[in-house]
Length: 269
Image 1 (cartoon, rainbow, N blue to C red):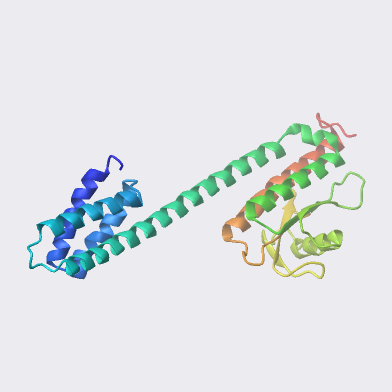
Image 2: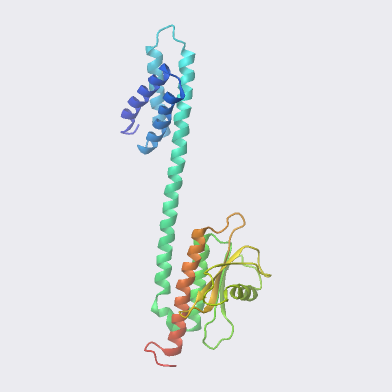
């Protein structure tokens, strides 16, 4: 039994005695509050059960012979069920809140790590291979953060290769370059376009989301595409994460391209 249990047991006994004298919804609410307090004091179900049985035994021992023990036992069952219902409801809600906070912290940590990696100046020194490395890192992190079925990213390197660099992870459909082209066309409508688009393509499932990779002048230089799970559509947070990742990716790709063209000191190569 925890250290907080003795005081809780006394409060439980008082509330149960009040309920026996007045079996109404008003007095029954005390059981609900006790269930909530048990969670707040980090008591377990065994602590709650111990308090209940101590209170029940005390009432049965103190009741006059003419008192119906069945009524006391029945009332005790109602009181306990109310307390347990509140306990489970609050405990589950608390556990979900803790899990949500832990998940958000993990997301924030992953984003910080991704930001640090994309800002690494050494990535810029490897030309085309650095862009491939950036895009592969991005799609893996984007998929994990959003629980996507698959993610795809493509970017024009501007380094003499006319075809864009494409990276993907997850169970992406075939014809990746065609799918990337359709997604890029959906967002390539000028610098005033929105940050995110829901794309219907001929090479992939319905409901995929595309986010442009924009250069400093606002023009698209690539696209980040995510496909949500069938039973889990992207949330507003998922969409915001994709936009944030796309912005970091565009900066990394453009930095690598500029480095390759002008070198570390800005001299044309």
